[in-house]
Image (cartoon, rainbow, N blue to C red; front, side):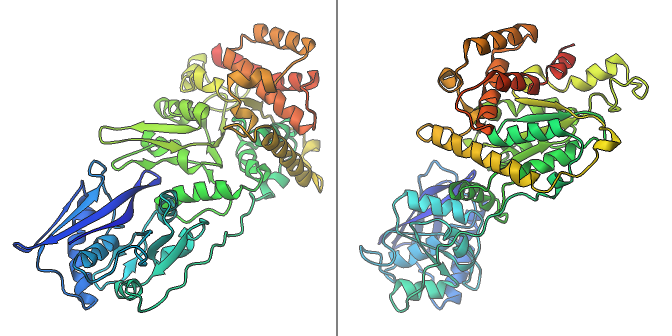
Length: 505
């Protein structure tokens, strides 16, 4: 007999549909699995054999062929154990799989233990997305994964403890309740670093602009001036994420077997990270820190200490908000819509241009800054110089300032959501060049100012576009529909031309 059951395997951070096709026929008893299975899938033969015996079912003494379609897709992981076992029983005629049976319009995933228990698998949420996209009504999976998969609405999720329980349910001998659809309580970033931020009003303003328009930002200055604290403060300004953002990011973490985050991710990799660690890669392809920061913050501390080849990986995702990885065995596009915040010292010792403290030679400084390419720096919208404030300025933020900043950022996000509701982007930092004239219209005086700044600071075309996007965000923060001269002037200042001049010197 023949049986075909929908299932799924992980491909990057997404679920890829797999049809488990099984035939049993007379001949020398043997068990074949074809369709590019990896070693874990091939080992499932012994797990399935033992699980069936432990569940009181004889293993068929026939020639068994299991095809995992499509045949060109590499199948990895143990999530196919359960559907292969059920398909064998269906092909043997021990389980109904005709239209109207519990198996119809159902996807099965799960790892089997030798005693017939279903063990949890990574990627349950990503696979639930796959089941819903296929138009299936039901998902049967290990009970420990049911709560996670049920986060996705529009799908009946049924948790299974053992293979015996699954067989009784599929035969109609018992009923199982579906897991309730209930989203967890989501939170915002910890405001304590922001409340402790003192003596840096320009930095605070730049962080608000960055959070409001999702603009990449670079903080530079001597050691101990609050760069790391400022980076940690940025999460407190970002609004709570939407249900869609939570589920998208949750599917990424689920694919790696990590707990689902309850607030926007804040990823801060060490400067010794490799290219594959940051961008993703390996075999099979796995996501890197860029993808783990999706809908959150990627913080790169001591930016010039990172390998230049690693930093250059950031150029494409900063522009396209997706990272494309191509290897000999596969190619994959991973989500990478993150907010980049970077920090650095101006020289190896950190005190340039204070020559009373800095002993670095010009060659040492240029070698230190040489890790940062011009194209990469040009993709950072905002640049802020942090200095040592006067002692009198070191006072905590007044009560209510944090709430006021958050409110203004939320207001700016609401304005952008309304403005871009019918477009494929939602933040000012993502406006493509073709739409700048539509959303960043300038008065004749503004055009003259932008032209003067463009010529004086020798801006690139990209840099000029960044200034316009920053000005658009500043206008949104002030609740104004038109970009005024003050917005444009502040935007030019926040591009930090002094830093650009130092890098190009």
